[in-house]
Image 1 (spheres, helix red, strand yellow):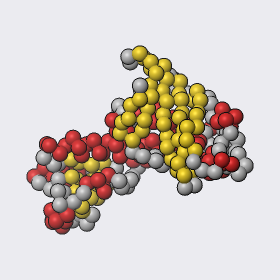
Image 2 (cartoon, one colour):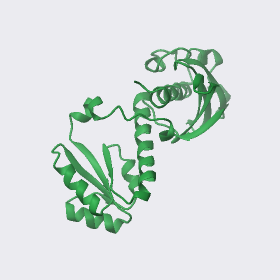
Image 3 (spheres, helix red, strand yellow):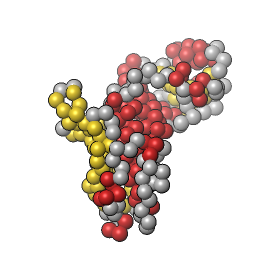
Image 4 (cartoon, one colour):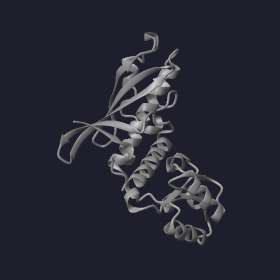
Length: 241
């Protein structure tokens, strides 16, 4: 069964909070406030009383409302599009203080941004798309394994890999489904087999898998795709306890 989902929609655990990340607890946190009404003002006051947290950005339903509120509370970064704030990796948290009808789409977008950041950090690579396609084998809740499609650009042409994982998250096989660059750059099948069974930290050319002379960009892209599959599976599907 194939399932196409936005990254945020795969069960994401919020148990990995600020206390679990020493990088966040050691620095002054930057937060954004979405909404400029009564609750936006209440949250802004509460945030500023925390001491090690600053209101770094404000988002409203229009640029004018956001700018006016920002001037009143002394925040220079304002916007009428909250998505631009979510795309900023310098923002550590957001406070959604808008009317109730807007809570779900804003929270959904925020979770997607957080999940993407976690996967990219763990895999040391950029996600080519905010959506993934996962295939799951098994009956009911008992998973016997999963496979992830990853389409990305190598040089200037698309490549698609299918990374097949066992139930415990180890790499069972990697299949090349699409390669539109010059045939000389196609990764050999025997090289793809060297990716099997290796954890994320070994999925780097020259570290845990061999390099391929003349196909450096191809093998870099392929190992990055496998690392993304491993990160998505570990962080968003199996999830650490």
